[in-house]
Amino acid sequence: DAKTTQPPSMDCAEGRAANLPCNHSTISGNEYVYWYRQIHSQGPQYIIHGLKNNETNEMASLIITEDRKSSTLILPHATLRDTAVYYCIVLSYGGATNKLIFGTGTLLAVQP
Amino acid sequence: EPEVTQTPSHQVTQMGQEVILRCVPISNHLYFYWYRQILGQKVEFLVSFYNNEISEKSEIFDDQFSVERPDGSNFTLKIRSTKLEDSAMYFCASEGGQYYTQYFGPGTRLTVL
Image 1 (spheres, each protein chain N blue to C red):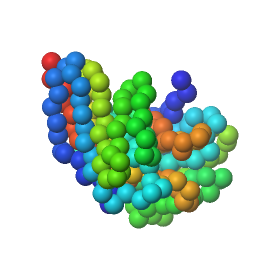
Image 2 (cartoon, each protein chain N blue to C red):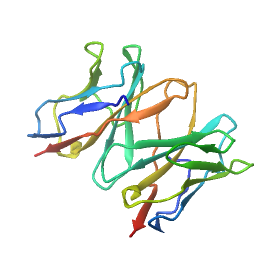
Image 3 (cartoon, helix red, strand yellow):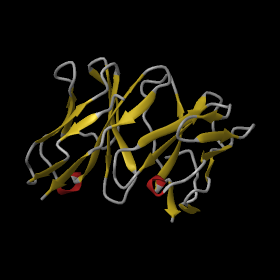
Image 4 (tube, chains in turn purple, green):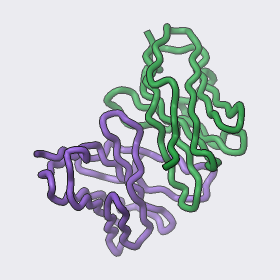
């Protein structure tokens, strides 16, 4: 089972920041937080990941709380093309495999 | 930017037939995965593959399924005798580099009639 909890859906106005929360209260010290998104049955697309520091790339920012029990993915200027299901996944490295366990994610609907 | 490719994009088959789904992972990646997504459901892990052998497989990956890396570029998923419930999107992913990030292909939609 997924170790994360996300709201099932969110709306955001085009051009505004989209803030997608994720709870991972049972996260272990060696587990990373990964974010993927899936646009209408396409393959999941990697967005960003982090361990404990905040991270930023060309797609998004990831804010992880100090206790690491929750995080927020920020899309700074959402566009209609950002409408997708966003998945927050915790992952530890170094095992036999790094399989991803997907939950149901958050359906972000960007409104014009 | 390198990407994972999959063929065919859509495969229609009759129940009981064999199908082979093909994937070309990113060239310097060493870990390969298959996932599937039944319409309206979650993305589910099927199998992982490293160093020419299966690293882990899920309960879904029974004896009807097999994977192979027949050459240096392709990674295939074979379903020996398809069932109606095998109808799904099948995604290949490859992983490599410093941060173990998996990159997914666009998927193959398998329809079993």
